[in-house]
Structure formats: C-alpha cells, structure tokens
Length: 192
Image (cartoon, rainbow, N blue to C red):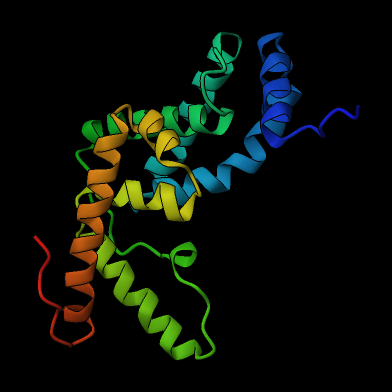
C-alpha cells in the first residue's frame, strides 16, 4: 500500500510546526507564496498599499505567534485568510477606509480571443464589483479569485455557510443587473 503524496496543506502544517518551534526560515517560506495571494485578496477591501502591507504583516505576526495553537479544524490557507480578513476589518475601522476603488479582476474573467473585449469586460466587472457591499465582494473574491469552498469562506468570515450562500446569491443578482447598465445596455429583468 503506497502512502498518498503530501499535499500543500501537509507542507504548510509542517511549516507551522517549525514556526512554533521558533524556525524563522519556516516563516519566510510561508510568507513568500502568501504575500501575493493576500495582497490580491486585500485589494478588494482597500486600494491603499500601506494598509494592505500593514494587514499582511499583522496577519503574519499573528500566524507566527499562534502557529503552535493551530488546531487543524480547517486548511492552513483558510486559517491564514481568516486572520487576514479580521486584521483587515480592524485596520479599516482604524483608518476609516472602506473604499475598494476600482479593483482589477484578473482571476474573475476568462481570457477571450479579443483583447479589447476582454479589457472592456474586466473594466465593467471591476466597476460593478466596486459597487457591491464589502461582504458580498469578499465572498466572490474568495470563491472565484481564491478558489475557496463555501465552508472555507464561512470559516474565514466567521459566519454560517447559509450566510455565505446568501451573500453570493445577492452579489450575483447585483452584478447581473449592474453589468448591462455599465456596458450601456438595458439590464435584464431584476430577480427578487
């Protein structure tokens, strides 16, 4: 019987154990791949690079401090994104900044054959996403941009799965109604 190959989560759990024993190299090894992912995720909450960097650093300070207390109830990535989300909310309350600006939506759009059409679609989608409430925008980013499951998103946002589903439903309805308007077309009949 062959053992199954280690997963990314297994490797990350190993890094957490090393961090818990004081291994700074493990922290650097964990930080590098997460920095870009967290920066992209946090850019949905604020366009201020100083706040994004502060939140990432605060997040990894907590990861470093709490590495030994990770219970393993979720994937390591879910745990880290949850910490980043809570740090971001705290930072945004302190800075008074809840502006998502005009986010780039590279991961939300499939590439098309026409670069101009793709650019326009990204622009419209970015403008529509910016008009969504923060909780709905974050749910879409975690699901489509980050590939997280509904259960992971619920853990990150510390809410029931049903709440995540409702936020996703309402975000999709709003996008369905906003996108045609931004493109200069009549929106489809609104869904209640």
